[in-house]
Image 1: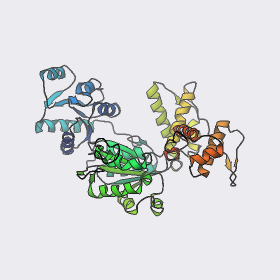
Image 2: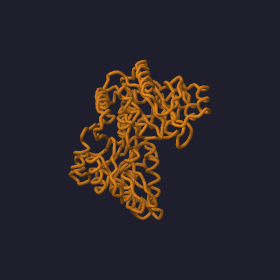
Image 3: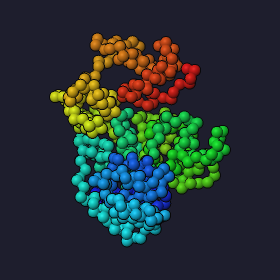
Image 4: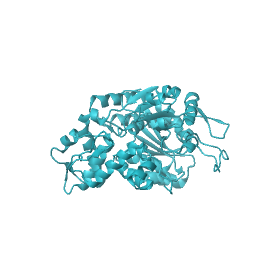
Length: 456
């Protein structure tokens, strides 16, 4: 792979074969392709990403190519070219009257395509270099993060399966997105939380099903793997996947084919797999939660994300990044009050980056002037070791309630029914509290779990 920046090309076309063909040709001219099959997806991509070349089909499933062109910031995006298989005088005249540079008809002449990609690659050389302390949505100036960035850049263009491990809130999905964005793969990025999908539905959701394969299957369904064709699938909380689905996943990884539930036809796959866990994956194999053969198949390339306490020097950079995004979103110019960044760096962050982001956001909202002040975290209760909790003076009632609920829930191994009976509340009340605590960064998805039955 070239050490120089690659030209970044967006291909907006619902024809998957065309997107793949553009990706293959682009690679010959030091360009990488991101694909969008719908107008909505393309709008979302151009809102956050700068492209050197945008190829737009006019006929899209959810709109017209001109709807995208009309919204493009031409000062940010590179050359915009209409590519259509159904030319008309009306669309050609409209293209001439717009800022579109070229209007091409499929099949595209190879010389025209080569010229576009060469120009895109040249335009990429003119971009200012990306900050050394940032890769996609990942930020960090510490040596451990620079090492992580280097590994991501090296393995992104391959199809090697990656296992990302790290505590909740460390940015595992951001790593997987960076791997996809740097891969040059034209397909979608599809994220799946294996612990959030009901066990009896997971295989169908992942691998698809045929009509009539089970009660309620009134039509065929393409699963997440097929939806990620040509792209990347992110399997979060892989240790929560049922063992039956793990057997199926192992076969898919080994054969690069899948058979839908209830079907007989093998479907070839071109999907990059990135799995993640906040648990010790090797320990999960000894406990029987993760198949050993699947563990080693996923372990083609491991990436470990450090907790925030091991990269405290990155905390001011991250906090400023979150504040900058809030200022940009709400058109403000707030800054941190003196010594706030040092206080943030010294504070404990059990929720890692997610907790830090929530704290910055809360203090941004609560600040009455242009200065954002950091309020040190509240005192935590002391576990007496005999099942009792001694609360410290200075804790408010809401903090005491939260700690009592979470400690009791942990005591009963996350059994909400027993916790509800002990505390004299309903399981639904506990669930609602956990949803709120998750939004504040105090608990992770695996603690919240599925909603209770209506009768609970």
